[in-house]
Image (cartoon, helix red, strand yellow):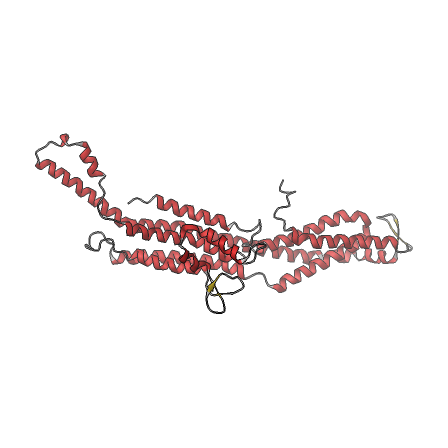
Length: 390
């Protein structure tokens, strides 16, 4: 079924030159029909042909030799485009992988002191209950089970809302990073989307992760002539949205690594300075790798294949196809049209596929599904938060 599917074939790039080549072949065949016949006899079409047709037919072998350099240029270009596409997918996969591991390390490293303190509190409660029972002269077997269960499940009175809120804020900004990368990589121009609609769509994708003020720090990356932050794609871009998120993650990583859990008794269960330094270094190393993955995708977006190579390939390809169609029609006649149509479709399809693979961040069906990558990262981060035990 995929053989006959038209989806993803980049037909807007294939159809115009394909129709031009088809009309080119029809025009030469009609010209050969109305030219006066000469003394040359064509055994393939079994009729006498004009001198012009005989001359063009004799050039068929010469023109066919051009297929070797043209094919080499096509294959090389397609190979380089495939490498660019795979590098982009690899960088996107690294981004998702780092989001998973980073939130796991943050949750474990940040919540572990709270979990350790609560375990100590529960252990102390059980010991106090046991001591009170022994002092009252009761036997261990006579202890009320409800009292033991209450002591086991008793939660300390310490309120950790500040720590949980800080962890959730870090998770929200980390979830926003793939979304900001997607907004940066997608082309600014899309048919049917004005600035207002495009801004609303991007704000909808961020959703409740960030408040309007924080979301505008990411989305309003342009400035007008007065230096005011606006969302106008024709204005000058002054900020890169992914870097805004990364800078905020660096700030939050410092706050998390150097957070004081117990202000009154700092020696109780706060991490040591060495533990804080190691924790902060590990978080920053992962954030820097996130920056590297974004830089890889940015390089692929902003560095296409050299224009001189592209124009050389397309010029030689079209020149070869037009000459090949002309000489094949002169040699075979009408019977060459179906084979030439298939051959032209093949050669033009390779070039169209190369163009699709060369730009992996566009909106078409062949390009990377950046939206699904954002959903996967968000689900993984949410799963890590749900599984936190403190």
